[in-house]
Amino acid sequence: MMSNLDRYKKDLDSLIADGDHLHLAMQAESVPEAFQKELKKRADTEVVKEFLKRLPSFKEAYQRWYSEAKVLVKQLLPDRLTDFASHYEKPKSRKDITYSNYTIEDYLQDLRVTRTYGEQTTKLVGPEAAIPQFRQQLAILKSVKARFESSLFDIRQLVQADLFDSELGAAKELVKHKFTRAAGAVAGVVLERHLGQVCDNHSIKIVKKTPTISDFNDALKDASVVDVPTWRFIQHLGDIRNLCDHNKKTEPTPEQVDDLIAGVMKMTKTLF
Image (tube, helix red, strand yellow):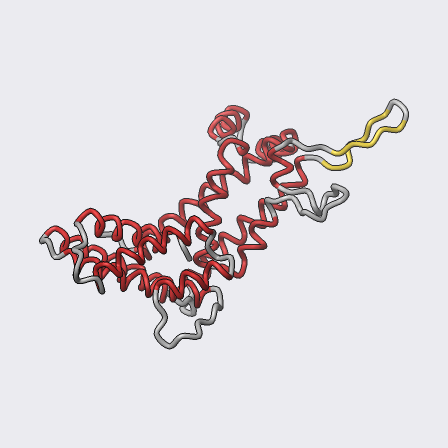
């Protein structure tokens, strides 16, 4: 079975390769003459034509790439997440559009700034201004790989993710053999530990010595790490866990415990 560490490496390598292709596509779209001139120095015309045909459409492929790359940066290099996003998003405080603050979002909208003097129109800023912005995003993603391969990289969370997968797999087996309370208890412990790790990731201090799922959940909502729908979902998972652990009068159903396990699996994969 492929480990979480192997999956991260595979996804990262794939995204970097896709990013290199998008970088070429962006140049081909925004500065076609200069780009093709440079290519023709290295290959004949037919080879260049075939190469250009194989390039993806930046405007069609970028959003998927950005969404997936952002998740990896958030998980593996969170201190660069804001920087990564800033190269895409338009600055809220921007008053004038210049070469330095032109973003990839502007590029996707084909935004151009011109100035007209009499009958002559001069382009001040155009799509080519987004090329350095994408280069920075790609460089950040490549720095994730460098950190990944460094002996200094803390793989605690990746190892923990593998452990969680193993424990949730055990919980599923317990449900199959009708040990629903035990399965729910195992899943609940995984959720509690994961929420504790998320609080650590965001430097959220918990006052209680033995905090519960509810304590972690409330703290994450108060810190705006989770929104209200997610908070309610985690609260629901906590209720099922409590039914398995504490309420001896009512038996949890296999369906409830299956929902708990699936919900905990979702949280460990999407909440960091």
